[in-house]
Image 1: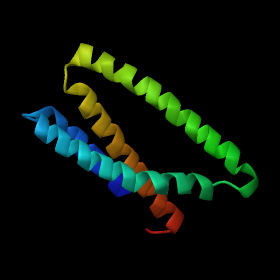
Image 2: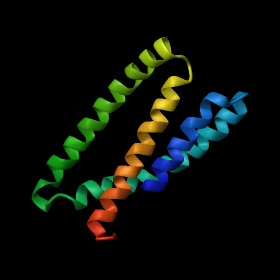
Image 3: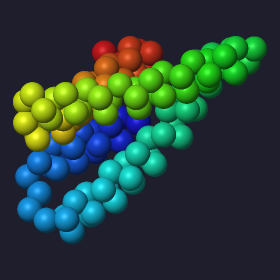
Image 4: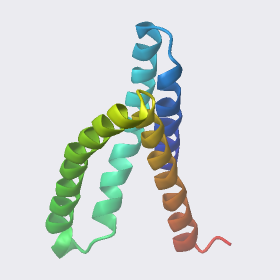
Length: 115
């Protein structure tokens, strides 16, 4: 999951510097790879962190929050685009993905007892 988030962040940081649509298509394919690599692990983590009697509820809340993010993200991105410039939403996305990777890595180290 951490590699998927870091890869997504790297792709997001690269998008504003692209010169043509062919490079955008290639980066989009790379982003799809990283997303596909992280999503199953993310869903399994939600299932593993909850008890068997609460999995349906936990996954429902997870899906709700993902849907809210899919609603708020484009609105926030449009606001950043209008107020800060065309590259701002991509940089913000990259920063958020990188921060999530750091938090996830820290949680893993804490849970695993790695010091």
